[in-house]
Length: 259
Image (cartoon, rainbow, N blue to C red; front, side, top):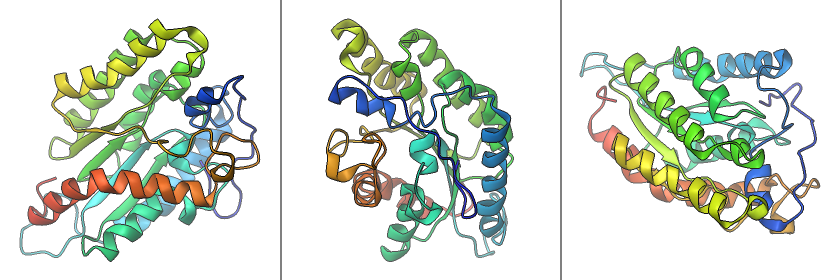
């Protein structure tokens, strides 16, 4: 996860085909999600962003108190904004868009480079120390990159959602669609894609479109490594995601304190 004074500079694992960019761009270093430096940087950045969110009344505060909804983006290096300054990552851009549309939110960036769904399931309890009205889950790309079991990824995503509901029962949840590369064959790609719709349907949460739609594989929209969105690409990611999130955020604004 990046911050102003020192961001992650690990190079991403490169795919052999353009479609591999769909998942490599989420992986960051592709290293061990338990790497102490990565986790330490994630915690430091969570604290920095959390400071602005703490200036408002907590979720569930009396209805008479003014409060801006808190949106927690929980994900991989795509969410963290690998290679970019924090304000250039799509969560910050979405915060700006929400304000411009008269739907102000406080964003917490909970992205961590290299994390699989198993790592997400282990980390979610710590991240949920930050009260949130909406949790947007972006996870699974690193599972696909490594050819891990779609069924295991599905179970991990369900575990993440269950943890959110247990720790913060008032929070709304949205799941972002991710894709697998064709390297492992059409059967794997199809099976991996399907788990998101299955989880969304089973858990009754909104399924947001593929995060890198219109960006993956387009060289002018990615950084020098060819796999992570650059500033221009990140703006497209934010535009696409905000279209789906705006109705959910508007609902939060109509029901302050309800999550």
